[in-house]
Amino acid sequence: MNIAKSGYRVFSANSSVACTELAKKITERLGVELGKSVVFQESNRETRVDVKESVRGQTIFIIQTIPRDVNTAIMELLIMAYALKTSCAKNIIGVIPYFPYSKQCKMRKRGSIVSKLLASMLAKAGLTHIITMDLHQKEIQGFFSFPVDNLRASPFLIQYIQEEIPDYRNAIIVAKSPSAAKRAQSYAERLRLGLAVIHGEAQCSESDMADGRHSPPCVRNTTGHTGLELPPGKQQAPFPGIELPMMMAKEKPPITVVGDVGGRIAIIVDDIIDDVGDFVAAAEILKERGAYKIYIMATHGLLSADAPLLIEESAIDEVVVTNTVPHEVQKLQCPKIKTVDVSMILAEAIRRIHNGESMAYLFRNITVDD
Picture 1 (cartoon, one colour):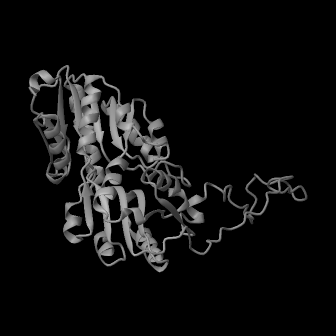
Picture 2 (tube, rainbow, N blue to C red):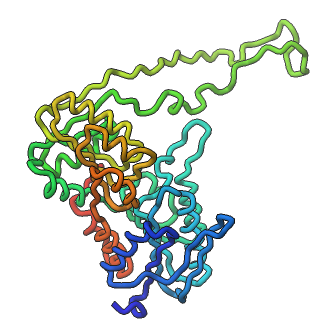
């Protein structure tokens, strides 16, 4: 393809070489070259972006994979988008396979909905459209003031199950918690397999679920007169006439597996695998219930901290993730980690958006709960 006549450019906003691998695969499939730009960290750790070619009137696609240094990657993307905006690019479309801060999409206590903040920052920087994959919560799409295409990795993971897992017909799809049951059901129905759910695993503590339930603070007795108290003999209850029911504390039920996994291959499916403690515990339970092989399938393999070591020492036989997040170092530490390439669907999404074609083809046979 003649880049000059294509009407669009593809840039990578990553300063890390490992993070540009996905961008190179996408451009190879599109038959174009990566746009000429320089992204680097100055000695004072500030991010600098220099675009080395004209983008006036062009549609620009910025491919940004998110490494462990999440905040640096976000700043690289924001600065790149703003540099292209001030260079008179026509449209700036972010290709962000793993959308960072997607777990912080609900209000907790006196925290903040960080994914909504990030959506506002991207719009302010100049982005007009986003292509991403398997958002942690689909409602995140509503945080944006511009279109969001939330692609799915499940067709690639299902293909891996069918082609790479021997005797997969003897497998059972497992949800490691009731909240993941809908996703697991979607996999089970398309593979024509059974479904099991692990119940009793701690989801989040009572303190995490609290949202101001201890406000206002208890009334304190004061020894001195501040001028705000009622005169003696006229003291009143803080909220007269209001009696709230007693809130029952949660009690974690014993861990049970709903479904028969004995003599079966257990395949746990999820969208993100980061802290693997829950997955390791689930694998041990499945082994106790008679599963003879355990696979974990996830879209985004963050695999932070000592995750590779824990996987290597666990009952898990294989962890399969896509290349939305770079994890080559983790693969060297743990040979159980396998990668599925999703550059094909990202490249096709770029091509269809540029040509004004429908995206419906990319969502065929995709269920609402997937």
